[in-house]
Length: 196
Image (tube, rainbow, N blue to C red; front, side, top):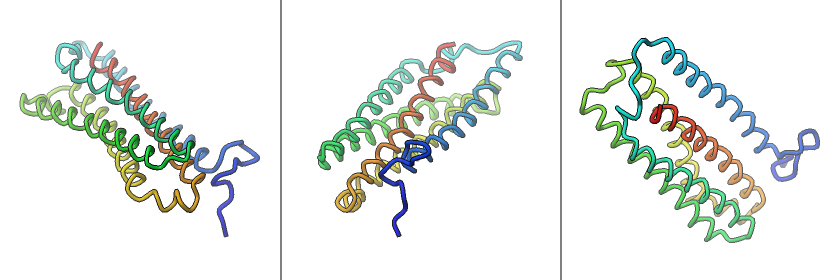
């Protein structure tokens, strides 16, 4: 038996199941990150002395990471568009660029973490570094998940594409929604942690 509404929209919501499920999941993610950002605000406003992110964090590297993620959102859209145009080869190229940009972000963030650890700027040394590592660490975990899903689709998606191209295209659209959310979280996190 086929699962209904994997391609066609549900009559009650106008969305197919995967898209509806992703929007519900992202709503829970907004609450998770919202709680973390709220904790940051309360900790910062309650602290008598709070370091300026621009003075203690590497703003040029974070700016480069912002450019990488914004670019990766564009390549993610282009990978979905390639499928809409029935071009699986082009899809693989664009999803490959998305993966490489995500890995580039992770490499730069790893260097940032290494630098902080080398200079004993650990979560145990200050509340600022505790919230910095908690927020960025949670974001990194989400980005790693996105890279893994994109990699799986790039390596093993052709079978589903050949059998059910519309369903596979929907999966990439849903993956893109997740990827854009992770990018958006960084776009909020960057000025919050690094520029204020």
